[in-house]
Length: 257
Image (cartoon, rainbow, N blue to C red; front, side):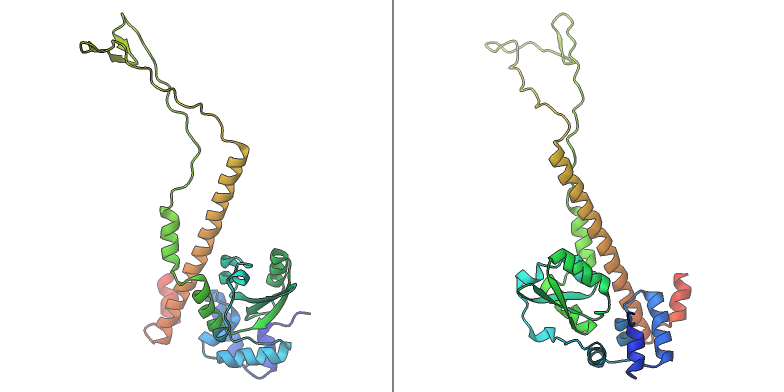
């Protein structure tokens, strides 16, 4: 049976039942991972959290601040997946991929990584703030708002539309395409050169339509990831207001309600 993070910390004496209940309530309210919530609420220090989990799970820890990560390793895991699950791949050896994460008991994400990379996943422990520093360092520190603006200002590909059909009416040779023909200047031809006919327009090829669908799906996935990151930024700001004593949780909940 899978052991939960909170239970392991209580068994190790790192936190008590009251702290776990408070952290779980805060997690439900703000949506942060439990380990990060415990650190943000100052119920446990980040290095103590990693040390206790390492003892309980028998897993090694990794200091991401001191380990250079090759770009080829980073490219094995999509950036949205790494940021949304607070993890980062840092080394590959043969058929093994070493991944730093706070909660290696999340077997679902480990299975997803194994399927995506076709490699065996070796989980290593790292603190939530250390992982966040590594994500910013290697994947870029632009804000979610910047990415959202870039995404929304990029023109989307649109299928070609059929131009309106022009009607040609001739009455006594004086009208052409709905316009009266003026007398031509001396020495010039009475009839203008024929215009180049527009290229035939038809339905786009199947391959192009598939590319457009894939592009739209990718844009939708990126928008969803940006919304999730915006929510995380808002939670951090609200937590900072509470930590600084500028507002209480009840006041914030009342105002949001």
